[in-house]
Length: 323
Image (cartoon, rainbow, N blue to C red; front, side):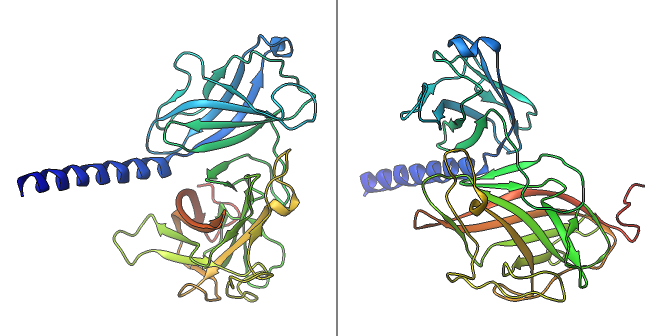
Protein backbone atom coordinates (compact mmCIF):
# COMPACT_ATOMS: atom_id res chain seq x y z
CA UNK A 1 0.00 0.00 0.00
CA UNK A 2 2.85 2.39 0.85
CA UNK A 3 4.49 1.71 -2.52
CA UNK A 4 1.14 2.35 -4.24
CA UNK A 5 0.71 5.69 -2.42
CA UNK A 6 4.24 6.77 -3.39
CA UNK A 7 3.62 5.95 -7.04
CA UNK A 8 0.26 7.76 -7.01
CA UNK A 9 1.84 10.82 -5.39
CA UNK A 10 4.61 10.83 -8.02
CA UNK A 11 1.95 10.58 -10.74
CA UNK A 12 0.05 13.57 -9.32
CA UNK A 13 3.26 15.61 -9.23
CA UNK A 14 3.83 14.86 -12.93
CA UNK A 15 0.25 15.83 -13.82
CA UNK A 16 0.54 19.10 -11.87
CA UNK A 17 3.86 19.91 -13.53
CA UNK A 18 2.43 19.21 -16.99
CA UNK A 19 -0.64 21.37 -16.33
CA UNK A 20 1.53 24.24 -15.12
CA UNK A 21 3.74 23.92 -18.22
CA UNK A 22 0.68 23.95 -20.50
CA UNK A 23 -0.66 27.03 -18.73
CA UNK A 24 2.64 28.84 -19.10
CA UNK A 25 2.87 27.87 -22.77
CA UNK A 26 -0.59 29.22 -23.59
CA UNK A 27 0.24 32.43 -21.70
CA UNK A 28 3.21 33.18 -23.96
CA UNK A 29 2.40 36.22 -26.09
CA UNK A 30 5.19 37.63 -28.23
CA UNK A 31 4.25 40.43 -30.62
CA UNK A 32 6.74 40.97 -33.49
CA UNK A 33 7.49 44.67 -33.99
CA UNK A 34 10.12 44.72 -36.71
CA UNK A 35 13.06 42.81 -38.18
CA UNK A 36 16.27 44.24 -39.63
CA UNK A 37 19.50 42.86 -41.05
CA UNK A 38 22.88 44.59 -41.31
CA UNK A 39 24.41 45.45 -44.68
CA UNK A 40 26.77 42.46 -44.47
CA UNK A 41 23.84 40.03 -44.34
CA UNK A 42 24.08 39.75 -48.11
CA UNK A 43 27.52 38.12 -47.68
CA UNK A 44 26.45 35.69 -44.96
CA UNK A 45 28.24 37.47 -42.12
CA UNK A 46 25.70 39.96 -40.80
CA UNK A 47 23.37 40.15 -37.81
CA UNK A 48 19.62 39.63 -38.09
CA UNK A 49 17.75 41.55 -35.38
CA UNK A 50 14.17 40.57 -34.52
CA UNK A 51 12.37 43.14 -32.36
CA UNK A 52 9.48 41.88 -30.22
CA UNK A 53 7.24 42.88 -27.31
CA UNK A 54 6.46 40.32 -24.61
CA UNK A 55 2.84 40.96 -23.61
CA UNK A 56 2.52 37.69 -21.68
CA UNK A 57 2.84 37.13 -17.96
CA UNK A 58 5.93 34.90 -18.17
CA UNK A 59 9.44 35.29 -19.48
CA UNK A 60 10.02 33.57 -22.83
CA UNK A 61 13.14 31.77 -24.03
CA UNK A 62 13.72 31.32 -27.76
CA UNK A 63 15.23 27.90 -28.43
CA UNK A 64 15.56 28.09 -32.22
CA UNK A 65 14.97 30.52 -35.05
CA UNK A 66 13.79 28.97 -38.32
CA UNK A 67 14.32 31.00 -41.51
CA UNK A 68 12.52 29.79 -44.64
CA UNK A 69 13.12 31.39 -48.03
CA UNK A 70 9.74 31.58 -49.79
CA UNK A 71 11.43 32.09 -53.17
CA UNK A 72 12.45 29.22 -55.43
CA UNK A 73 16.11 30.25 -55.46
CA UNK A 74 18.67 31.22 -52.83
CA UNK A 75 19.58 29.85 -49.42
CA UNK A 76 17.21 28.45 -46.75
CA UNK A 77 14.94 26.70 -49.26
CA UNK A 78 13.29 24.27 -49.57
CA UNK A 79 14.64 23.29 -46.13
CA UNK A 80 14.67 26.13 -43.57
CA UNK A 81 17.87 27.32 -41.96
CA UNK A 82 17.93 26.66 -38.21
CA UNK A 83 19.78 29.17 -36.03
CA UNK A 84 20.16 30.02 -32.36
CA UNK A 85 19.96 33.46 -30.72
CA UNK A 86 23.33 34.95 -29.89
CA UNK A 87 24.41 35.25 -26.25
CA UNK A 88 21.39 35.97 -23.99
CA UNK A 89 19.30 37.72 -26.65
CA UNK A 90 16.89 34.77 -26.69
CA UNK A 91 15.78 35.33 -23.07
CA UNK A 92 12.86 37.78 -23.14
CA UNK A 93 11.60 39.05 -19.74
CA UNK A 94 7.88 39.45 -19.09
CA UNK A 95 6.71 42.92 -20.08
CA UNK A 96 9.74 43.63 -22.26
CA UNK A 97 9.17 46.10 -25.11
CA UNK A 98 11.27 46.47 -28.25
CA UNK A 99 13.41 43.54 -27.11
CA UNK A 100 16.07 42.60 -29.66
CA UNK A 101 16.62 38.94 -30.54
CA UNK A 102 19.84 38.60 -32.55
CA UNK A 103 20.98 35.77 -34.77
CA UNK A 104 24.05 35.53 -36.97
CA UNK A 105 23.12 33.89 -40.28
CA UNK A 106 25.91 31.94 -41.91
CA UNK A 107 24.13 32.19 -45.26
CA UNK A 108 23.34 35.18 -47.44
CA UNK A 109 20.09 36.97 -46.50
CA UNK A 110 19.02 39.37 -49.24
CA UNK A 111 16.16 41.85 -49.19
CA UNK A 112 15.12 40.88 -52.72
CA UNK A 113 13.91 37.53 -51.34
CA UNK A 114 11.11 36.95 -48.85
CA UNK A 115 11.82 35.02 -45.65
CA UNK A 116 9.39 33.51 -43.17
CA UNK A 117 10.91 33.63 -39.67
CA UNK A 118 9.55 31.33 -36.97
CA UNK A 119 10.54 31.82 -33.32
CA UNK A 120 10.34 28.50 -31.45
CA UNK A 121 10.14 28.84 -27.67
CA UNK A 122 11.33 26.28 -25.13
CA UNK A 123 7.67 25.68 -24.22
CA UNK A 124 6.85 24.62 -27.77
CA UNK A 125 5.14 27.75 -29.12
CA UNK A 126 5.80 29.27 -32.56
CA UNK A 127 5.60 32.97 -33.42
CA UNK A 128 5.90 33.96 -37.07
CA UNK A 129 6.98 37.08 -38.95
CA UNK A 130 8.60 37.97 -42.27
CA UNK A 131 11.74 39.66 -43.54
CA UNK A 132 11.62 42.18 -45.15
CA UNK A 133 9.04 43.38 -42.61
CA UNK A 134 5.55 43.83 -44.00
CA UNK A 135 2.20 44.99 -42.71
CA UNK A 136 -0.95 45.14 -44.84
CA UNK A 137 -4.36 46.41 -43.83
CA UNK A 138 -7.27 44.95 -45.78
CA UNK A 139 -10.14 46.69 -44.00
CA UNK A 140 -10.90 50.11 -45.45
CA UNK A 141 -12.32 52.65 -43.03
CA UNK A 142 -11.54 56.12 -41.82
CA UNK A 143 -8.78 56.41 -39.24
CA UNK A 144 -5.04 56.52 -39.09
CA UNK A 145 -2.45 53.83 -39.15
CA UNK A 146 -0.94 52.08 -36.18
CA UNK A 147 0.43 48.57 -35.89
CA UNK A 148 -0.62 46.38 -32.98
CA UNK A 149 -0.81 42.62 -33.53
CA UNK A 150 -1.31 39.79 -31.02
CA UNK A 151 -0.46 36.21 -32.01
CA UNK A 152 -2.78 33.45 -30.82
CA UNK A 153 -1.50 30.10 -32.05
CA UNK A 154 -2.01 30.16 -35.83
CA UNK A 155 -4.01 33.40 -35.61
CA UNK A 156 -2.84 37.02 -35.72
CA UNK A 157 -5.29 39.50 -34.17
CA UNK A 158 -4.95 43.12 -35.34
CA UNK A 159 -5.75 46.11 -33.11
CA UNK A 160 -4.84 49.15 -35.20
CA UNK A 161 -7.27 51.98 -35.94
CA UNK A 162 -8.44 50.31 -39.13
CA UNK A 163 -8.91 46.84 -37.63
CA UNK A 164 -10.66 47.41 -34.28
CA UNK A 165 -13.93 49.06 -35.26
CA UNK A 166 -17.61 49.34 -34.33
CA UNK A 167 -21.00 50.26 -35.77
CA UNK A 168 -24.02 51.71 -33.98
CA UNK A 169 -27.65 52.18 -34.99
CA UNK A 170 -27.97 51.60 -38.73
CA UNK A 171 -24.40 52.50 -39.68
CA UNK A 172 -23.04 50.54 -42.62
CA UNK A 173 -19.46 51.84 -42.39
CA UNK A 174 -17.49 50.96 -39.28
CA UNK A 175 -15.20 53.38 -37.47
CA UNK A 176 -12.39 53.09 -34.88
CA UNK A 177 -13.68 51.74 -31.57
CA UNK A 178 -11.07 53.05 -29.13
CA UNK A 179 -13.39 55.97 -28.37
CA UNK A 180 -17.09 55.42 -29.00
CA UNK A 181 -20.40 56.72 -27.64
CA UNK A 182 -22.17 54.87 -24.78
CA UNK A 183 -24.72 52.88 -26.77
CA UNK A 184 -25.40 49.47 -28.28
CA UNK A 185 -22.70 48.47 -30.78
CA UNK A 186 -21.43 45.66 -32.96
CA UNK A 187 -17.64 45.32 -32.58
CA UNK A 188 -15.38 44.47 -35.53
CA UNK A 189 -12.02 42.72 -34.99
CA UNK A 190 -9.70 41.80 -37.88
CA UNK A 191 -7.82 38.51 -37.69
CA UNK A 192 -5.62 36.47 -40.03
CA UNK A 193 -4.51 32.86 -40.31
CA UNK A 194 -0.71 32.80 -40.38
CA UNK A 195 -0.41 29.00 -40.56
CA UNK A 196 0.59 27.62 -43.95
CA UNK A 197 -0.51 24.03 -43.29
CA UNK A 198 -4.22 24.27 -42.42
CA UNK A 199 -7.37 26.37 -42.52
CA UNK A 200 -8.73 27.79 -39.26
CA UNK A 201 -12.48 27.77 -38.56
CA UNK A 202 -13.91 29.79 -35.67
CA UNK A 203 -16.36 28.14 -33.28
CA UNK A 204 -19.55 29.68 -31.89
CA UNK A 205 -18.08 29.66 -28.36
CA UNK A 206 -15.82 32.59 -29.36
CA UNK A 207 -16.77 35.65 -27.33
CA UNK A 208 -15.64 39.04 -26.04
CA UNK A 209 -15.85 40.06 -22.38
CA UNK A 210 -15.69 43.69 -21.32
CA UNK A 211 -15.36 44.91 -17.73
CA UNK A 212 -15.93 48.59 -16.84
CA UNK A 213 -13.32 50.27 -14.67
CA UNK A 214 -15.96 51.56 -12.26
CA UNK A 215 -17.40 48.11 -11.40
CA UNK A 216 -16.01 45.34 -9.23
CA UNK A 217 -17.03 41.72 -8.81
CA UNK A 218 -18.85 39.23 -10.96
CA UNK A 219 -22.01 40.14 -12.81
CA UNK A 220 -20.59 43.50 -13.90
CA UNK A 221 -19.26 42.30 -17.26
CA UNK A 222 -20.70 42.92 -20.70
CA UNK A 223 -20.44 39.83 -22.89
CA UNK A 224 -20.66 39.82 -26.67
CA UNK A 225 -20.72 36.51 -28.57
CA UNK A 226 -19.50 36.01 -32.10
CA UNK A 227 -22.01 37.02 -34.78
CA UNK A 228 -22.56 35.86 -38.34
CA UNK A 229 -20.17 37.41 -40.91
CA UNK A 230 -23.24 38.97 -42.57
CA UNK A 231 -23.96 41.10 -39.49
CA UNK A 232 -23.57 44.83 -40.01
CA UNK A 233 -24.84 46.84 -37.03
CA UNK A 234 -27.20 46.66 -34.01
CA UNK A 235 -30.16 46.91 -36.38
CA UNK A 236 -28.96 44.21 -38.80
CA UNK A 237 -27.26 41.25 -37.18
CA UNK A 238 -27.58 37.50 -37.15
CA UNK A 239 -26.59 34.61 -34.89
CA UNK A 240 -23.43 32.70 -35.76
CA UNK A 241 -23.98 29.35 -37.48
CA UNK A 242 -21.11 26.85 -37.53
CA UNK A 243 -21.71 25.44 -41.00
CA UNK A 244 -20.06 25.67 -44.43
CA UNK A 245 -20.89 28.95 -46.08
CA UNK A 246 -21.99 30.55 -42.79
CA UNK A 247 -18.87 30.32 -40.66
CA UNK A 248 -15.57 32.17 -40.43
CA UNK A 249 -13.21 29.85 -42.32
CA UNK A 250 -9.75 31.37 -42.78
CA UNK A 251 -7.66 29.86 -45.56
CA UNK A 252 -4.08 28.83 -44.89
CA UNK A 253 -1.45 31.51 -45.48
CA UNK A 254 0.59 31.47 -48.65
CA UNK A 255 4.39 31.31 -48.91
CA UNK A 256 4.58 35.11 -48.65
CA UNK A 257 2.19 35.41 -45.72
CA UNK A 258 -1.61 35.58 -45.30
CA UNK A 259 -3.57 36.07 -48.52
CA UNK A 260 -6.93 37.78 -48.89
CA UNK A 261 -8.79 34.57 -48.01
CA UNK A 262 -6.66 34.22 -44.84
CA UNK A 263 -8.25 37.34 -43.31
CA UNK A 264 -11.63 37.84 -41.67
CA UNK A 265 -13.45 40.72 -40.00
CA UNK A 266 -15.04 39.03 -36.99
CA UNK A 267 -18.23 40.64 -35.64
CA UNK A 268 -19.13 40.55 -31.92
CA UNK A 269 -22.40 41.51 -30.25
CA UNK A 270 -24.49 38.38 -29.75
CA UNK A 271 -26.41 38.29 -26.47
CA UNK A 272 -27.68 37.10 -24.09
CA UNK A 273 -26.17 33.72 -24.95
CA UNK A 274 -24.02 31.81 -27.39
CA UNK A 275 -25.53 31.32 -30.88
CA UNK A 276 -27.75 34.39 -30.51
CA UNK A 277 -28.10 37.63 -32.44
CA UNK A 278 -27.89 41.04 -30.79
CA UNK A 279 -25.48 43.85 -29.94
CA UNK A 280 -23.16 44.75 -27.07
CA UNK A 281 -24.88 47.04 -24.58
CA UNK A 282 -22.26 49.63 -23.63
CA UNK A 283 -24.71 52.21 -22.27
CA UNK A 284 -22.51 53.64 -19.52
CA UNK A 285 -19.71 56.20 -19.76
CA UNK A 286 -16.61 54.33 -18.70
CA UNK A 287 -13.30 52.75 -19.65
CA UNK A 288 -13.39 49.05 -20.45
CA UNK A 289 -10.82 46.31 -19.91
CA UNK A 290 -11.49 43.66 -22.53
CA UNK A 291 -10.57 40.05 -23.27
CA UNK A 292 -11.44 37.71 -26.11
CA UNK A 293 -11.87 33.97 -25.83
CA UNK A 294 -11.16 32.52 -29.27
CA UNK A 295 -12.15 28.92 -30.00
CA UNK A 296 -11.33 27.39 -33.35
CA UNK A 297 -10.65 24.19 -35.29
CA UNK A 298 -7.09 23.80 -36.55
CA UNK A 299 -5.84 20.61 -38.23
CA UNK A 300 -9.09 18.93 -37.22
CA UNK A 301 -8.54 19.66 -33.52
CA UNK A 302 -10.45 22.08 -31.31
CA UNK A 303 -8.32 24.69 -29.54
CA UNK A 304 -9.18 27.57 -27.24
CA UNK A 305 -7.18 30.62 -26.22
CA UNK A 306 -7.98 33.56 -23.96
CA UNK A 307 -6.02 36.61 -25.04
CA UNK A 308 -5.54 40.04 -23.46
CA UNK A 309 -7.25 42.61 -25.59
CA UNK A 310 -7.00 46.33 -24.89
CA UNK A 311 -8.79 49.25 -23.32
CA UNK A 312 -11.37 51.42 -24.98
CA UNK A 313 -13.61 54.21 -23.74
CA UNK A 314 -17.30 55.03 -24.05
CA UNK A 315 -17.95 58.74 -23.83
CA UNK A 316 -20.79 61.03 -25.01
CA UNK A 317 -18.15 63.32 -26.52
CA UNK A 318 -16.89 60.54 -28.86
CA UNK A 319 -14.93 60.53 -31.08
CA UNK A 320 -13.13 63.00 -28.79
CA UNK A 321 -12.29 61.16 -25.56
CA UNK A 322 -9.37 63.38 -24.53
CA UNK A 323 -9.89 64.83 -21.06
